[in-house]
Amino acid sequence: MNEIVQSIRDQNWAAMIREQKASGLTIRQWCADNNISENSYYYRLRRIREQLIQAAQPTPAVMDSAPALVRVPDTAVSADNSTACIIIRKGSLVIEINHGVSEGILSLMKEVLLNAE
Image (cartoon, rainbow, N blue to C red; front, side, top):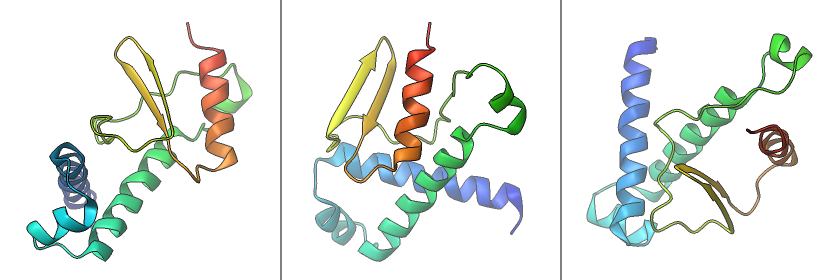
């Protein structure tokens, strides 16, 4: 698929996820109200999360040097009405940690936080 088309689709999916979070409705109710199947919603959510994780993976050049600050793209889901089990806030930075997060992601977040200025 064309990268531009996929990028636009991903932006739309991220906006959809932010809209659901901001609505205050359960995912089931929001999907019913918006004629979107729950399977489609969760598929899209998984795709956006995978892209954020991939964007946060250090490249081999970065791995050889000191850990760098990882900037999360604007496609990140908003912390408003969050169901995260841990939320870390520092200035405008918000980090949400949900149940089931992988050890790899936790390790990466730990390195970033330990080396943050």
